[in-house]
Image (cartoon, rainbow, N blue to C red; front, side):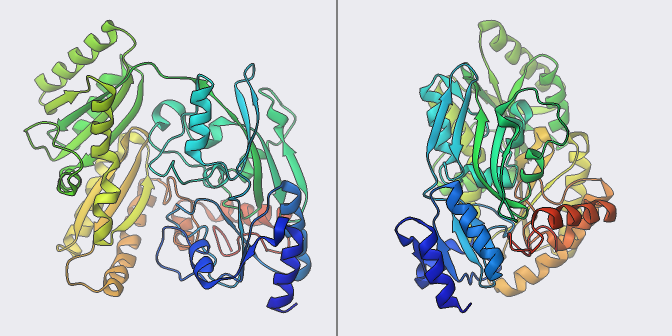
Length: 463
């Protein structure tokens, strides 16, 4: 089939012939937040039902057309980039919340439901969907599950996969599978949900999901601390976790703080400056819990771990304190940052970060390094800002060498080259730093079973 015939057939498979081929649309829907690979899709198609997705996959197998899933396109690994004439399957119109069960505390959604839409729905029902991150206003559920997104509450609530009661998927063969049927207990062999969660659309497309909800947190309170040293992040974490269940434990560097303050949307939390800062969130359900938090804070100061701190006295102040952490990415965006999303077990974080900092600084002393991340679960975000006057091409070329140094350190500490954003295209060459040859071989075998013709998001995760 030639491209015109493919496009004509696609229009017969979805409602109202919803297929876009305008260059501006191809540019918009053919990329994610990465800027490395120029998008070159053939067309953008918008299904509304699982049946239409199945029809698209069956046609793609017959016509030997590759498909790339598109959600909110907020990923940082080029997992949703269509760079080689693929057809982009956009889930924007599969955005319905289909069913709610108060007794089961579950909600059945289509894959295009926005994260914040699900959070708001849960709140309206007096419940809570706890998976949260900065892109909640644009990321879609299907994409979250396809990368097993985590975010800021993992220390208390876990990753996306921990909230999935059931999945509907269309495999690369075009089969519709209803996985787990929303059961809490189902010990009948392989749980195929967990193959599709984190698979980045390489085995098939998630079209619907039943998500679990939980009770709303009570009086979330935020404490921001200035730390004397990086190792004090572990001292503070251990001290608080002995007595208080934290809902978040974040950190950021002094350099990160300076960029947020210069951005002008938030003020410094206290006068003292520190090399690193920690942000703790917990439920202050009683005066006793608040008293305990203040006692632990004083203990950390007495031990020399904490230079100063502030605790929120209202929801507004809590939101403003969170902006110190969540405003970092926006504040450094104009500086064309190199980003890396990596993880190790929590106890290894200080040594791990220090090694990376040292090797980058040794070789590229003009690079400004910005650190922040979900230190409570071992997830670090390394950001390096392009020096003024350096061409983008030269900067990204140097960053390729940084990748090698970083991932060698990741391998030495038995960490992950991708903590949250998946492998996609940008991290595929480095997968062996986290996965063994045997694991990768099994992954290829699984891919062959579900997608024998290799049409589902080809070139991502594994070859």
